[in-house]
Amino acid sequence: MTHTLHRRGSAESLADDFVVFAIAAQGFNAEGAAKKFEKFFDIVKKYNPNNFGDMRTGNSLVAGEDVIRKSFKDNSIVHAVFNDEDTVTKVLKELKEADLGLSIVVSGLVHKTDECCKKVGLEMHTVEKSLGIIGNTPRLPDESILEVTTMCGHGMIAFNLVKKLADDVKKGRTSPNKAAKEIAKQCVCGVVNIPRVERLIKAMAS
Amino acid sequence: MRVNEELCIGCGSCVPYCPMGCINLDGKAQIDLDECVECGVCFRSKVCPVDAIYEGELDELRLFRKTFSDPWIVHPSTNVPGRGTEEMKTNEVTGRFKRGYTGIAIELGRPGTGTRFYDVEKIAKACAAFGVEFEPQNPVTAIMSDKKTGKIDERFMNEKTLSAIVEFTAPNDKVVDILKSVKEASKELSTVASLEVCCRREPDGSLPMEELAKKAGFTPSLNGKVNVGLGRPLAKEE
Ligand code: SF4
Ligand code: SF4
Image 1: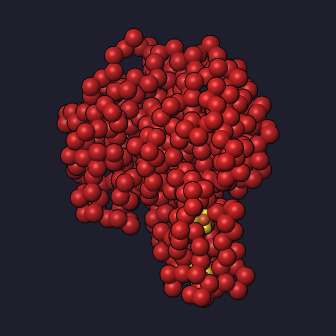
Image 2: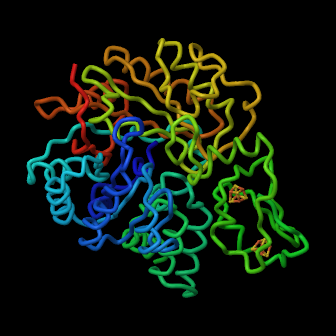
Image 3: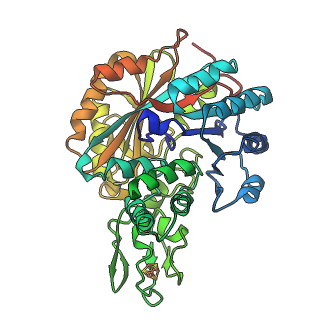
């Protein structure tokens, strides 16, 4: 399942968009993983992610930190969103030292992620890339809307919601920050990059 | 999902939240159940001021829609929440994708259009023609009545879900032809699909899937997902 892949945008637009997440392999090392997710969460939280969440519990805005922390399960998938590669490098360094045994995946610009890995003595093991959208593409809205909605790979963010909120910002009915948070709330996993959405909404409204 | 028409005050607040655009306002909100995929967004958003949106009883087919559309649901076939699998996320532990092979996934209905299963079948059949073995730990594979041909169980053909992923691993010498065939088959789709590939990094740092994708006429994205190899125990390399 590819919830953080297929995020759209130019290299420039994606430069501040990294998700670090942890997962255990069912049938291999998942037994007792809940405790390890707690440690993972403590590490990522130290670096002030702009959003975070557990796919089993919810995101930072709806479930909140305390509920997420108390609810880890052996089949949780725990995410944290960051805006720069220096922070990702520090997070990876600490995760390597902690040696939790969970799989750690970074979603972001691959050449930047490769640099982060090399700096802390890690090697990319397996890489996944998008080859884009095929099929009946005339059904899709503008690229600017897709850049926002594809941040939630489960498709929880409606094209119409982005259009409406951008319009609300334009008409002064809400702020870009409030609009970004309303959008991020819809994504259960907490992988929407809130400052990036704020930036994109601001551009759409101007 | 349903709307209690006695409670609904017709404010329209729920309308833009629906990813399928299937809530219509005609005095009161009405959900087009044929288009609704039971994703739960309208309900979870808590946007309705009078709590008129409710799930109600779901029969087998409505539940089918929900398991593919609502990320809170854990699939019995995978024990993973959401509609897909662990794929490359745990590859250093499972050894699912080995050197010399490429993982391919085609997610029908993504982004934001949803899919019927007759469209899923078109893509599955195009891939099955190459003798691929569909990922067993995947909910789409679980509803194939013939895993050799990619045939989907008739009962689900017209059901609509937010998305559904056709997923398999192929030896590298077949990848270019498979990708070309998927592209060709996608011309017959009434929906869209997001296409992805994954592979092991070679010792020299290269990613063979990139060349293969280019040969098939695709441009691999600059961004992607990187498993950094910290999971334990490590799968044995062959
Ligand atoms: S459950 Fe999903 S598809 Fe159905 S009406 Fe609600 S938001 Fe729309
Ligand atoms: S938000 Fe509630 S009250 Fe308003 S139209 Fe939708 S169902 Fe009716």
